[in-house]
Image (cartoon, rainbow, N blue to C red):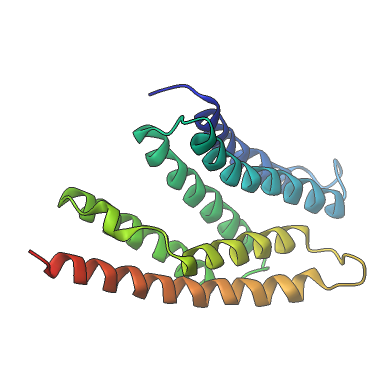
Length: 188
């Protein structure tokens, strides 16, 4: 396991998961709900930024590694799953949305693993639809964690619509990946 800055940022993202969750389990007398929402959203936002930054630095510094390629998506999925389960518990996201997003992540991870096992892992690369899904999902989670109005904007309303968009894009991207894998597997 090579230790480099991109991998350190990925580990930081994993370590920030229990930190942002912890704030929702503090006794209410310790911190006002608005402060909890702000702090947790800020920590989640920092973790989400490390997702972009670690990939950028890995390419820029030529520090890409097999371990980093493995750990990065694991960190992303852990972070999103933890946030969605928390938001579900808080009543800020519907169970069906959480199930669609988490279920897709598990299914696509298994698909990529299988494709890699048959020597065709590169054929299930990240698509533009997947990038749009990720962006809307991360912004939605941030807004739903924060949950307070921003400059008169209803973060709950906007976050809810974005998380539904992310769920829709999740289904679209899953179908895309399955079709891509099917077509690839049919080739000799």
